[in-house]
Image 1 (cartoon, rainbow, N blue to C red):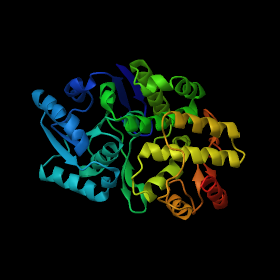
Image 2: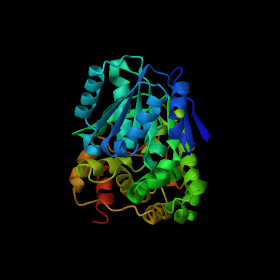
Image 3: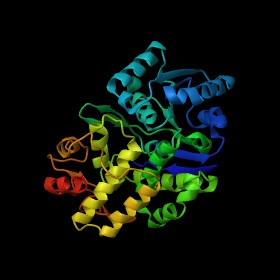
Length: 369
C-alpha cells in the first residue's frame, strides 16, 4: 500500500491520507475505525455501484459490528442535482443519524461530489471518507475537497469545500472498469502530465499499450503519480485562490460541452475535447507552440478519447455556458492554458488563468466545424 499525504494548512486538522493499493476494500472497517470513527455510517452510492459493491461493503461493516445504512440514488450525472441532495439528506434525517455519524462516498465522481456535499451540509457538516470506484475519481475528483451538485445554469455551481478524512483507492476495482470509463479517467491523467510533469506525460505516451491493457504496474504508476500531482496542487491552494486553477485545463470548454449535451458526454470525454480546443487556443494566442497542441491531441486520441465538440451545442450555446464558469469574472472568459507540456501559463503575481477575447474563443471552437 502506498500512502500520499495531503497536508491542508488553511484548516486545522484537515490534512488526510490517500491510500493506494489492492484489496483495500476488505480492510475498510479497520481503516474507518482508525481515520474516521463514527457511531453510525451512511454509505452513499449510485444504482450501478450498489450492484457491484454495495452489499459487500455493508456486510463487511456489519461483520465488524459497525452500524451502517445504505443510501442509493439513480446513476448518472443528470441526477447530481439539488433534488437528489435534498432527498439523501431527508433520508438521513429520517434515519435519525446524528452529528456523530460519518458518510462513506462509494462510487465515481458523481457519487463523490454528491455524497461529499451531503456530508458538508448535513447538520452543518459531518465527516466523510471517499472510496472511489473509477479511475477518474481515484486520480482526480476524490482529492481536494470539492463537493457539489449541478444546476440548470451549469456544472458544479452549488457546493462547498469539505475535505474527506481519508481517500481509499483500491486498484482491484479497476480490473472490471468498462473500457470507456478507463479512457475517461485517462483524460485526467493526460491533464496532470500536461499541466505539471513533462516526464509523466512522456510515460503516458510510451506506455499507452500497457495502460490500456491494464498492466498492473503501469496502472499503479498512473494512479500514484496523478494522485501525487493533484495532492501537491490542492494542498497548497485549498480553495482555488491561486495555482489550483491550473487543474481546470480543459474544463472551461469541457463543462460547457457537458451542459449543452445534457450530460450525454462522459466528464472525461468532455475534458479531453476541452483540452484539445484549449490547447489549440493557446497556440492561436501565441502562448504555446503548435506542437504542444499536436502532442496533447495525439495522446488523447491514442487513449480513444474524442477531440471534436459534439453537434449538441452551437458555438453560441457553448459561449453562454462558459459565461457561467466559476473562473469567469465580469463576464470575461478565462482559461487555464499550457505554455508547453508540463508547464502552464501564469504565476503567483499575474494569476493562473488567462482572459481571452470572445472572438478568439469563437474562432477556436469553430476552427474544425
